[in-house]
Structure formats: structure tokens, C-alpha cells
Length: 240
Image 1 (tube, one colour):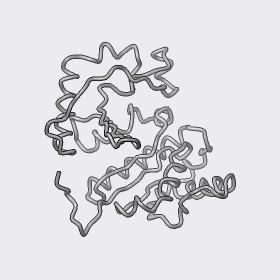
Image 2 (tube, rainbow, N blue to C red):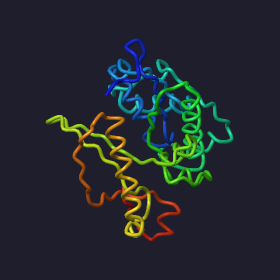
Image 3 (tube, helix red, strand yellow):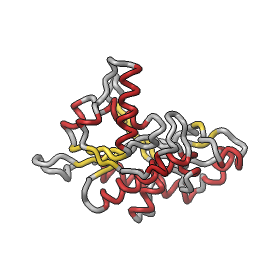
């Protein structure tokens, strides 16, 4: 597969902080403490700067030897949220404030990427229940990406490389963020055909694999976020 980037220019990536009250800021600070990532891409971080600084100070106070990137050294895009939103932030507690900040952060990252400022987006985790509390009714970040980019055929793909033998697994999910009891009705021949065609096209176009071996796996269960889904569906699991 031929790279779309020249040897003179690294890909420009923007990393969102995800839900500011969750693990996103910590994950980003720990990840970017390793210089190898910025040797492979031009990286910017977008989110609420004051809260990221506060998170850094709290983590350093709790573990002075922790490998954390100093936010002062980041190429940071501060969302500069109004106090009416940020005053509700509570560390470790997802709520309307954290949901609104997380949503606006991703929305801005998508808009900037579509405008050509970046080549791609890396998203830190969000709390879907917090998005709902803020009035944003999306199953996840993937759906907002699809809506803003005008994409009709889309899916959630995981790529993992074994640290033992280098074997690479690429997994496209057939269903996401729905109650377990809804899965049998959702797995229609039409859906499976759509997802398999999307996977084949992705393997060929994005990974250069013309003759990949494809297998259909059984259910993968993950814990559902609280809020409306649990109450409406009386279940604690969804097909991940």
C-alpha cells in the first residue's frame, strides 16, 4: 500500500481528551510521554486546558515518578469552555458538564479535520451516559464522525498486533452499543452483507490486503454505560 504522505511531511493527527472527568486526560499524558509517537506524526491535543493541567498536577502529586507528559510542552488546542460548563466538572464523575465538554471537543476536532487542518483523529474514551446527560443522543463517537463527514457506510474497526508473534488481527464489529436482547433482530442478512463488504473494501484499500482470510466470530460482550439504556432495556450488557 502506497502512503499518501511524502517523506517530507508526517501525518497531522489531533488527539481528543475524551471525557475530562474520565481516564482520557491521563491516558493521553501517559501515551505522549513516549517520544516515539511524535517521531511518526505531527500531534496536537484538543480539549479543556485548565482541567488537563489540574489532572497532571493531581497525578504527579499521587505518583511523582509516573511517566507523564507535561501539558506545557504539548501542541495544545484549548477549547476555552465557559465557566458555566466547567464549574460542574468533578474528577471521576461523568455528568452533564463533562459530557458537553467531551462532545464539543470531538465536534471541533472533526470540523478541523474536515477543513484540512489535520489528516486524522485519535479519540480518548468518552462516557456515553454523560453525552446523554448533556442532551447529545449518539450511540458513540463513531456515529458523530459519520454524521459530520456525511458518511453512510461506516463501522467500528479494531486493529491489534500480538507482542509475541507479530500476528495482526483486524476486527470489524457487526453491531455496537445496543442491548443484548436486540442483537438477534439486528443481525439481518442485509446488515451482515453490508459489514462484510465494508470490511473487504477496508482491507483492500486501507491495508493493501487483496486476499485476506476472513472469519465471523461469536458475540463479544461489554458492559453498557448506565443511564437510559439500562433502564429501557433492563440489561447490563451490549454486543461490543
